[in-house]
Image 1 (cartoon, helix red, strand yellow):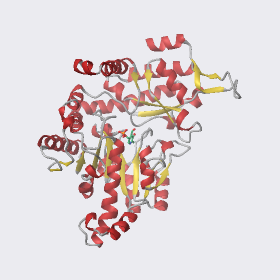
Image 2 (cartoon, protein in one colour):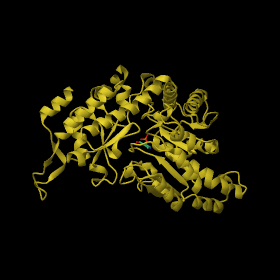
Image 3 (cartoon, helix red, strand yellow):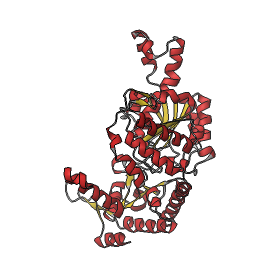
Image 4 (cartoon, protein in one colour):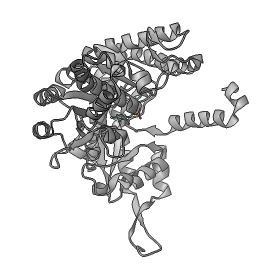
Length: 453
Ligand code: PLP
C-alpha cells in the first residue's frame, strides 16, 4: 500500500476506507462476499501485464507458457469442482460469460449444421453471399428466460441489454399466488415459444430450481438448456444443490460469476458438455478481449479453496443462515416473498410491511450500518428504481462465521429500523403533503441503538 500511496495517495486512502467500510458495516448484499487473502494476492501481481489471446496451448502471442499453466490449472479445478466436461475460465464477468455461451450455442446449433450442409470447414470458407445468408440465419432466434421482475437478470433477454437485441426474447414469470416458478406453466410456454435457448437462473429468486425437470422441458421442445448459476454456484460447488437441483449435471451449458456465493475474484466462467467445448473456447477473441491472467490465477486459488470440506460446511451454513433469517423476519411480521427461502437470499416486501419503498428502506438501513440493496418484488408496482423490496443474502455474513443466533439478531435490528422508518411528507410543489419517494424520517436514537447492536 505504501507503493500505491507514493504514486496516488487518494487511491491508497480509498482502499483503506473501503476496508473499513466492509469491516464495519454488515454486508447483506446477496451477490457479495469476502474473498480470501490468498485469492486477493494471486490477483494482484505482474500477470496483469501479459497478453495471451487464445486459450491454453493455442495462443496468438509468444511467451504464454506461464499463462497456459495458470489457465489449464484453473480449468482442471473448475471441472473437478463442478464435475463438468469442460470449463472456460476467461470471462471477465458474469455478463461476458453469458455472451460467450450465447455465441457458442448459436455456433453449435445454428451455424455448424449450416456449414455441414455446404461442406464448408468454417465461416471464413464461405463466399460473401453464403456468409450473408448464414448471418441472417443466426439472428432472431428465441430465448426464453426468467423475467427481470421475477428475479431474472438483465442479460437474460431484457430489451435494452445486448441479449434482447441478439435474440427474440420471451420471458416466464413466477406465479402471482405463490411467488414461485410453476414448471408446468413454463413447459406450456416453452411448447408455444419453441425457443432455441431455455435459460434458467436468477439474481433475486429465493427458491431452488429442479434442473432435471427444466432439462426435460428443453428436450421436449428441442431447446438448449442454459443455466446461469451466477448467484448459487457456491451452493453447487459446496454440494448443497445436488441431484435434480445440480445445474451442471443437467444443463447443456452453465455460466457463472466467480465472486458471489463461490467467494472467488470478480469474474465469470462457462461450463459445458463436450458438444459445446470447441465453440466456448473461441470466446476469446470472438467475444472477449485478452484474458486476465491475474484473475484466472485468483480463480484457480478460489476453486482449490472451494474443493475443501470447509467450503462445503460454509455452503450449508449459508443456506441454514438464510433459512433462519427468513424465519426470524417472518416471525417479526415482515412479509417474506414466497414465504421463505431455499438458497442464500430472500426478498422482503417493505411496501407491504412498512409502507415505505425499497429505496427508503435501503438508505435508512445503511445509515444504521447495514449494507443491502433494494430490489423489485414480483409484479412490483413501484418499478425498478424505487422498488417495493429489499434483497437480503447470507454469503458474506456466513464467511465471517456468523450463525443462527446472529441471524435472529439481524432480523431484530432490521425490524427495529424498518418499523421506525416513515416516508417524509413533501413540503413543496403540487404533491405537498404527499409521502416522498426518497426522503424518510428515522430518529437518531433508533440509529444509535441499531448501530450499537
Ligand atoms: N447473471 C446473474 C444471474 C447475475 O446475478 C449477475 C450479476 O449480478 C450477472 C449474470 C452478471 O455478473 P457480472 O456483474 O459479473 O457481469
